[in-house]
Image (cartoon, rainbow, N blue to C red; front, top):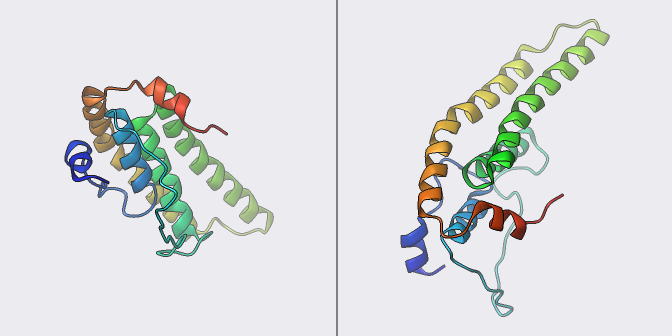
Amino acid sequence: LRSTYLRDVGLFDPTYFLYYEDFDLSWRGRSAGWTYRYQPDAVVFHEHAYSSKAGSEFFHYWVDRNRRLTLVKNAPAGVAARAVVGSVTRVVRFLARHWLNQASRLRPPSPRVVRDQLTGFWRFVSALPRALRERRRIARRSTVSRTEIAAWTVHK
């Protein structure tokens, strides 16, 4: 990336730690009016999940948290709201399944599992105020509407 881009858009958001930091930076750049070009001669070596084990709880936690934070910061309001509601829904469903699974085995819920889920959820919730401040800052500087960028993204 050009140094003028980085001065304009900023660097990686340190809130992310792992995963989605590059997507967040690119989305902020696109909002600021920057465009990207495919350079077929460029070579990049990337080791997927190098810092963690793909499929591990650690991996899933950071991917899910940062995907949702990226949406809160950059996506249209409806998508951002669904990301927050989805986080609540995910933790409630997970804990309900865990409780039912343990009850079927005549065991109490695992305190570690419950603690880890609630801690992860709290870390997401505690990151929301900063993400919302960043959302307002990005919106003030944006030269491209969130709706236009949403149309540019791939949807499942």
